[in-house]
Length: 78
Image (cartoon, rainbow, N blue to C red; front, side):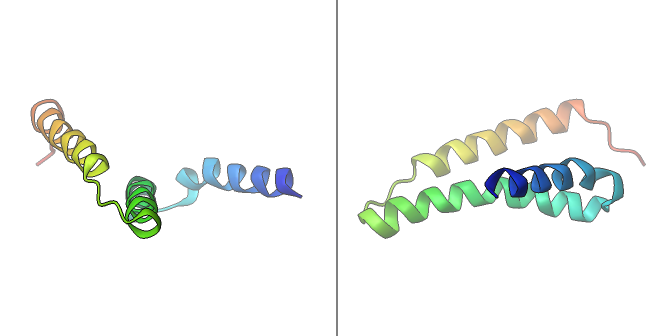
């Protein structure tokens, strides 16, 4: 049963870019980025009572580097 569900989700995930909208793909990408960070913070802070900003720092550094690269290398039409 697990492998059947896994295969179905994999097929849908691989086929979604062909029939999905750009807005839906953007939302899915944001969801896939933010969920692991939120789960890590919830596990550390919620279950252990330890407030750690280590994951957030890595996320912020990656966002800053992406902003620098996107600003210098990606052409915006118009």
